[in-house]
Image 1 (cartoon, rainbow, N blue to C red):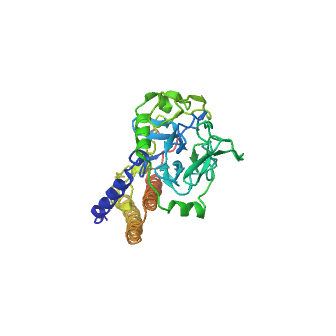
Image 2 (image 1 turned 90 degrees about the horizontal axis):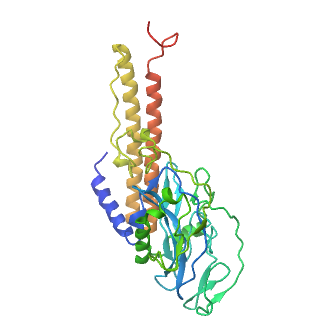
Image 3 (image 1 turned 45 degrees about the vertical axis):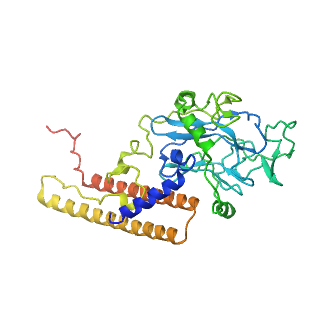
Length: 375
């Protein structure tokens, strides 16, 4: 089952290398959390520092050691004329919340239906547009000094929802699905976060005040005028976007501790079916040889079926990797494929964990009559 792991590990490393440009190394492929981020805080937008800067909304990122932390919204110079920012977002993957990295491209793609504000109302972008090589700002939603920046307009926009939900899907998440047009935008030529954004994220991660556990959803630095500068032109949150709920005491990234039953095969957060060790039965010891033999056969049968499931999924994922190489997938397509494979693998292991528990319960000794205590 593990004969192709060397090749896939090489491919996976190559993909990670591709995405290491920008903030992907921090919150990109493979980062999953078993509890959702806090609500988006309420804050004002700092004034645009100069012509050609585009707004990138704040969001909750995640760190293994410190949990969720706030990455302040900020103005960033576009990497090239004509490019717009598609924000990243947290989405429920069936077994955990997974972060989908943002990117720069000719159009704004899917960002989970999240209402980040300031033109990002959940679909598309209403904060401005490129016009003749210059970015024109919609002053209805953007804070711009019109005495310095003259390429502006003022168009009222309609906000469908005023909620501050910060994730897509799952319990309480935004119920939005990617359209065919948005999917096509993700396939266009685009680039990941620029260096200024990467440095901005690193600065946020290193600031203890921005951790949700410290600010309870109301970060003291909600947005900045320039990336990485948390003092000059920075603004604080007016309020938390909703009631802050501390994570469970046993919460962990990817459900590794909160749901130990999901790791029956010995792998926390497996990314591919080939990462899972073969299921093995546990020799029963009931004290009755005939019963032990019967139970052993049941366990062997279940383990064989589960290993067949692994092989089937591995073959499917191997085929998709081959197709990706043959069709020369772009970065976004590779990221989506790897996230899908991780979701498939974790869901399969959850299913197998449930099957194993059910069999163990059936094979458990029946309780004694009369209260269960021997006389």
